[in-house]
Length: 72
Picture (cartoon, rainbow, N blue to C red):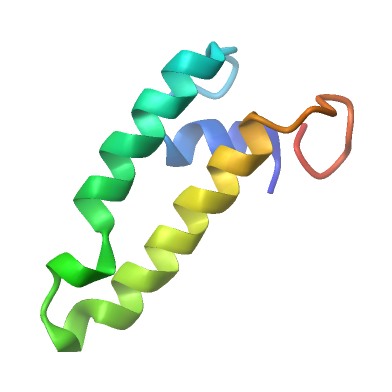
Protein backbone atom coordinates (compact mmCIF):
# COMPACT_ATOMS: atom_id res chain seq x y z
CA UNK A 1 0.00 0.00 0.00
CA UNK A 2 1.34 3.40 -0.92
CA UNK A 3 1.30 6.31 1.53
CA UNK A 4 -1.31 8.26 -0.45
CA UNK A 5 -3.62 5.25 -0.47
CA UNK A 6 -3.10 4.74 3.25
CA UNK A 7 -3.92 8.38 3.97
CA UNK A 8 -7.14 8.14 1.93
CA UNK A 9 -8.20 4.95 3.72
CA UNK A 10 -7.84 6.71 7.07
CA UNK A 11 -9.60 9.84 5.82
CA UNK A 12 -6.66 12.19 5.21
CA UNK A 13 -5.97 14.15 2.02
CA UNK A 14 -3.37 12.41 -0.23
CA UNK A 15 -0.48 14.84 0.32
CA UNK A 16 -1.14 15.49 4.00
CA UNK A 17 1.48 14.31 6.54
CA UNK A 18 -0.51 13.41 9.67
CA UNK A 19 1.18 13.20 13.04
CA UNK A 20 1.32 9.80 14.75
CA UNK A 21 -1.41 10.98 17.15
CA UNK A 22 -3.67 11.93 14.23
CA UNK A 23 -3.04 8.57 12.57
CA UNK A 24 -3.86 6.73 15.78
CA UNK A 25 -7.09 8.71 16.29
CA UNK A 26 -8.19 8.16 12.69
CA UNK A 27 -7.36 4.46 12.96
CA UNK A 28 -9.42 4.05 16.12
CA UNK A 29 -12.37 5.88 14.57
CA UNK A 30 -12.27 3.82 11.34
CA UNK A 31 -11.81 0.51 13.17
CA UNK A 32 -14.78 1.24 15.38
CA UNK A 33 -16.94 2.00 12.33
CA UNK A 34 -15.93 -1.13 10.43
CA UNK A 35 -15.29 -3.79 13.06
CA UNK A 36 -16.63 -7.13 11.74
CA UNK A 37 -18.38 -7.97 15.02
CA UNK A 38 -20.71 -5.00 14.53
CA UNK A 39 -22.16 -6.35 11.26
CA UNK A 40 -24.66 -9.11 10.52
CA UNK A 41 -23.20 -12.39 9.26
CA UNK A 42 -23.92 -11.68 5.58
CA UNK A 43 -21.87 -8.45 5.73
CA UNK A 44 -18.94 -9.81 7.75
CA UNK A 45 -16.69 -10.76 4.79
CA UNK A 46 -16.80 -7.18 3.46
CA UNK A 47 -16.28 -5.76 6.95
CA UNK A 48 -13.30 -8.05 7.52
CA UNK A 49 -11.62 -6.96 4.29
CA UNK A 50 -12.23 -3.30 5.22
CA UNK A 51 -10.81 -3.93 8.68
CA UNK A 52 -7.65 -5.49 7.22
CA UNK A 53 -7.24 -2.59 4.79
CA UNK A 54 -7.51 -0.08 7.64
CA UNK A 55 -4.97 -2.02 9.70
CA UNK A 56 -2.56 -2.11 6.75
CA UNK A 57 -2.96 1.66 6.23
CA UNK A 58 -2.27 2.27 9.92
CA UNK A 59 0.87 0.13 9.84
CA UNK A 60 2.06 1.81 6.67
CA UNK A 61 1.68 5.34 8.01
CA UNK A 62 3.34 4.54 11.32
CA UNK A 63 6.16 2.49 9.85
CA UNK A 64 9.62 3.45 10.99
CA UNK A 65 10.92 3.53 7.42
CA UNK A 66 9.14 6.41 5.65
CA UNK A 67 11.44 5.89 2.68
CA UNK A 68 10.33 2.35 1.86
CA UNK A 69 8.55 1.91 -1.48
CA UNK A 70 5.73 -0.05 0.11
CA UNK A 71 4.61 2.87 2.29
CA UNK A 72 5.46 5.98 0.28
